[in-house]
Length: 397
Ligand SMILES: [Fe+2]
Image 1 (cartoon, helix red, strand yellow):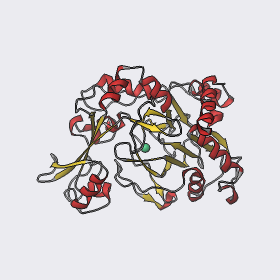
Image 2 (cartoon, rainbow, N blue to C red):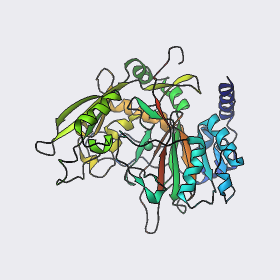
Image 3 (cartoon, protein in one colour):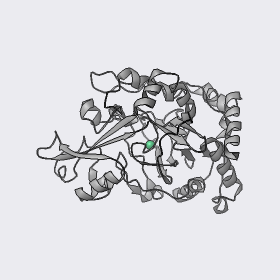
Image 4 (cartoon, rainbow, N blue to C red):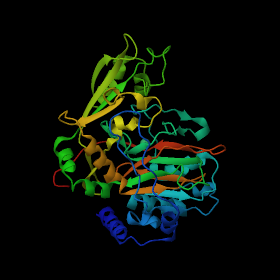
C-alpha cells in the first residue's frame, strides 16, 4: 500500500531524528513546563509535563512545520496551490501540520486554509463540553475551556460511537513575548502507544476496555440556580430540549442512559450516560491498532478548572473505569499521562497560524494559561469529518 510505504518512510525519518534549527531554537530557550497546578482536594493529583523539553527526540519539525512566506492570497486557499499540496502531503504522511507566517488576519480565510485537509466540518453534537460557534472566530468553535485550566492530552470525542477524523486550530491572538505561555501541545500517539504496551496497564486496557461515564445537568433546573459548578447541560450536549429525544439520540450512539438525582439541586435529575468501548482503535492509514484514549475522560479533566475542581472526584461530570467497572488507580493514571507526555510536541502560536491534527494519530492538550495585562491568547477550533469507530482488529497489534 502506497500510504503505508509512505508512512514507513516518515517513521524512519522520525527515528533518525535529525536535529534542525527549529528544534534547536525550541530546546535552547524553553524549559519543560512546571507540573500542573494541584486541585484543592486531598487526593493525589496526576501531574502533567506535556513534553520532555526536547522536540527532536520526538519528531523532526521539518515534517510538520510549513512556512507560508508571510502573505497568503485567495488563490493559496485551494488544494491545488503549492501550499495546499504541501499541506496535503505532510498531513497524509505525518497526521500533523502547523502553518506559520500566513499573514492571514481573517479567521474565515484561516478556516478555509484548514479545510484544504479537513474537508467538511462537523457540529459539536454530544460533545463533552459546551461550545458555541462564534462569528468573531470565523464561525468556528471557541476552545470550550477556561484559559486557567490545564487540559490533559486527549483525542476529541472518543467516548462515543462516532469520533472526528481531524481537529483544526486557528490562532487569532497569541502571547509571543513569553516563550511557552499559551502554547498548545500534541503527542504522537503511535509512540505513546508503543510505550504503553510495554506496561502492564497497556495489556489491562487491551483486555478490559473502558467505561466512559458522563453526568449532564438539566438546564431548566439550573435556570435560577448557581451554575458555577455546571459543566454541560444535556440540552446543550444533545441539541434538544426534549428528554425523550435526547435519550434517543444518545442511545443511537451506543450510550446507556439513566436519570439520577442531582445532589446540588432539590428534585433535579441529571442524565448519566455510560459507554463501554475499547481504549484502542484500528487506524487504516497505519494498518494497526493504537491507543486513542487518555485520562482526560476521567474526573482528572477538572483538576484545575475553577469551581469544578472543588467537586469530589466521584461526583464530577466525567468519570471513567475499566470496562469491567473496576476503578483505575492513581498510579495507573499517572503512568498513562507519562506515556503521552514523553512524546509531546509544542505548537508555538503566532497570530494567523493554522494547525491541523489527525485526531487518531495525535492527542492534543495544553497547560493552564495565566495572561499578563495586555496579553491575548485566542484560538478557534474546527472539527473534521465524523467517522464511526470500529475499535480494534485482530492481528493488527
Ligand atoms: Fe480538545
